[in-house]
Length: 157
Image 1 (tube, rainbow, N blue to C red):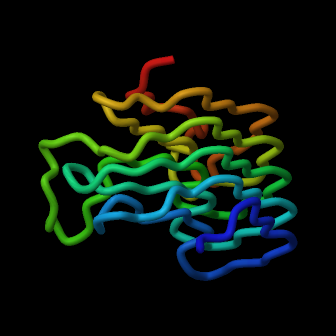
Image 2 (image 1 turned 180 degrees about the vertical axis):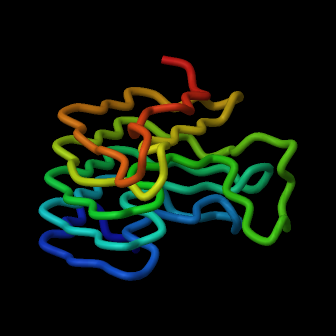
């Protein structure tokens, strides 16, 4: 049985990969991920901050009711990510869409600094677009010479 309504509270990461849900959709019959809250966490000098990642062209699944809140990032390369084209080592069907349905996801009160100009990266499946994704009270500045920004939105509302 897969746990539901999991709360991750007060974790400090760094250096490392940050906090990720996934990668999802690689194996047949994966249980749904439902009800995960990550709150009051700090990431310092990590490659990612808070992330959801799914494989393209793999197995169907669902991931819903995921909430990231009250997160501090310091010099994090990719502070906020939804990546439905996760493809490490180029060993996946990158030209296909993810079959994992993402819904009811929020990123709230996330603040700090990004090591790259791109602070938020949202890449959703074209065949199963993300539903009800909320970004609120996001204050992330680039620790370099240019401003941090939200530059990639590949999902439908």
